[in-house]
Length: 273
Length: 261
Image (cartoon, rainbow over the protein chains, first blue to last red):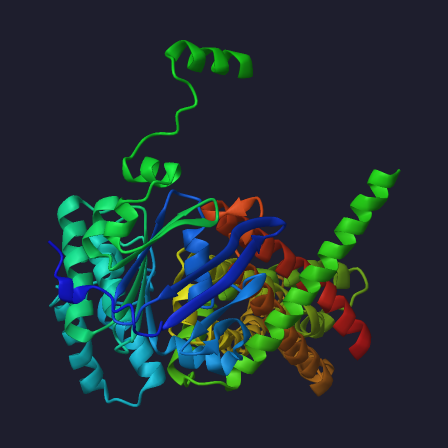
């Protein structure tokens, strides 16, 4: 059971407001007029099938891609129209965990975590070393600071990537497919870590995933996407009650049924051959 | 007919776009040199990678280039009874032309390709995006130290190439062919002027900029173009970087020579 105290406060003003976002890849429209809010100190999960546009949406939210039209307000400031300097100020407030961890291969885990601290702060090397140890302790990788990324497993690399994302004590954390490629135990461990980050540090967290179990475990607010559109948006309970055919298909893990019989499937293959 | 014209037009537009992107890349990389963080240690690391680690291959190439120049020079000059001019022929060829060009080609093959692949892998593994998300300018953090390192290392490697090449030429000319050592050294000393050395320095500087610009640019945008994603994109970018850098070094060599003669 989810702790009711962790539910988003609907009265609080949104930290991020996405308004009528449209995005293209060349001439192909991948996001069609999306509007939603990200509540502060809550976990917003964006989920949907592969290719539905959720990773593109994440890129828009962290300022790596510009939308064709629409606005993204962060604390009232429009991310789309921010100057380079303003964008950097915003990015110092966020942490991003990429799908593969995105660790710098030529550096040790400790050096990876030290990168933002060395660039943005004037802390002594000793303080930076202690901070790296603390961040690794937070993600359960204490003692791994001298390891190279290639010596770590997939799950450990993601945890190390998370430690680096936490280095500057961000207000907002973005996760791109945190559970993909992980075994169920490691995946559940990462879910617990995300929940702890929210409850202990009051972070606002945005997670992009297609893992149903993980999404319903951690989400305070769920967005279900398909073909560049939002199909369902609300608390996990509200989404579970959705009557939308496509949402039901996604939640109940029903495959795309093109052929009801095996013979039809074989005939279609023969006709293409 | 319309299809041919539209294909030419499309090629022209793509070419102009690519040149524009390369120009912007150069501009941002140049600005990156003056932006924080400090680049002293990262530049030293690049000088070590581009310069120190290329010493063996550059010296080896230089020795054999000098030796073959000694042989060919002796063969040609002996027809006119001017073997005594072998020293000046070897020295001038190396300092004005072969030194800068062959060093640039060796650096392109050894360090340029590695730099392009390294940056390309950073791109496809989202490491460059990760830097941007940490509010760190990738041009300043990744590219600028490589640019500075290359600009420092290539002229120094060229100087080493020239000296080793001349020793190779001396070894063959004097040691094997029996040219008078005094005449060899005297010829070198008298024919090489400051402007010859200056031409070599100018060439090596321009080649360094050209190599690092092309290799970093190709790596930076590796795997992002349509039809060449992922590892295939990196391999394609590395090939393009080496071929384009080598060709541009030779083109640039002709232009600089014609301007400085």
